[in-house]
Length: 146
Image (tube, rainbow, N blue to C red; front, top):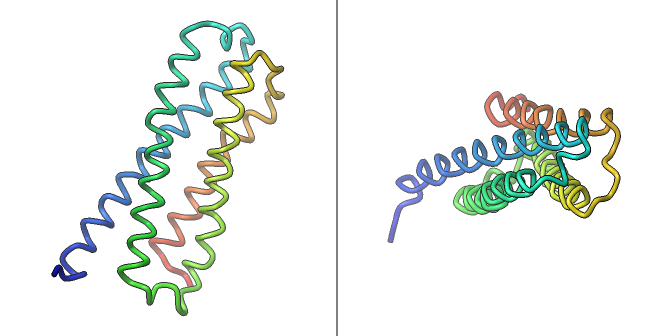
């Protein structure tokens, strides 16, 4: 049998690695969408589809790994769910990040199907969402203000 104390730091490290990978891919995907909005012909070029698939090949597994390792951390330390206001504030933000992930994937799919891209204001707002959510999540997870 293993001791939680020996495995917990490893799970936490893998959780952080998965988060960093997921965020890097999400930031890349948002930039790709902004570039496609600036030049509508970009989305129809073969390079756009290959690049989008390459980013998604990192983004989807990293999101899954983030969820699996994060859930494992809570299972190993169920006390985190009691009296930890910072965690209760963080979880809706994490679900918001999953929603942004889904919107990004759908936006790329729509562009590849030739649907009109969203406005530049929408794309730029979407591009800032992962950063804002990440900043809030990081403050809650590191500072644990309540």
